[in-house]
Amino acid sequence: MQELHLDYETSSRVDLKKQGLDVYSKDPSTKVLMLSFAFKGEKVQLWEPHKGPMPERVRRALTDPNVRKIAHNAAFEIAITVNVLGIKTTPDQWYCTMVMALSLGLPGKLELLARDALKLPPQYHKDTEGDRLIRLFCYPKSTATWKTHAEEWERFCHYCLQDTVTEDRVYTVTVSCKQ
Image (cartoon, rainbow, N blue to C red; front, side, top):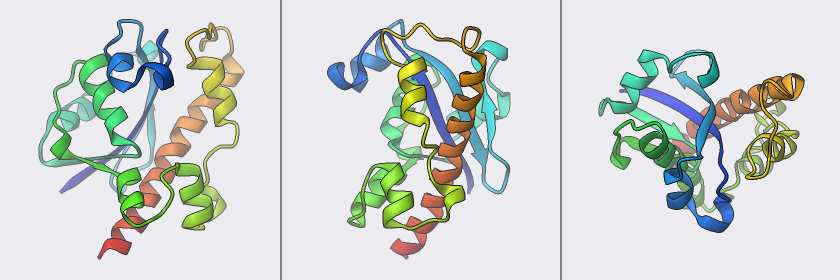
């Protein structure tokens, strides 16, 4: 079965933590800033909506029941795919590395899971600048964009790509733990 690993970065006027995922993903102000993705065995790539349409291969994979979609906290990626991008997909096609980790008694937070629990090498650790960049580009009152903060945007793109690299490795390790 083909696998697609993915991670969205989004922004909205809605506070995700206060309002919850359903309200957040259905609000008209919510938008995808970028998507990092990798098909099994391929290099992680980045889609930035302001640069053009989603790659057709990714769009097809998101609706294909024969493609296993893998994400950390997959409920978020499912909600964004369906409610923001309008792409129909069903939860039974998705695998969540956070749920997999929790089912093994491991931490659900990707950073702690990769670094502390699984003790993955540093190339699989989350980008330490991530929280700052998320506050800069994603929070409800943020006004920063790829145009106004080009240097930070490049770091944010790297952060998004790194999350998919980390999630891919976590998936491989946790699947082997369950066997």
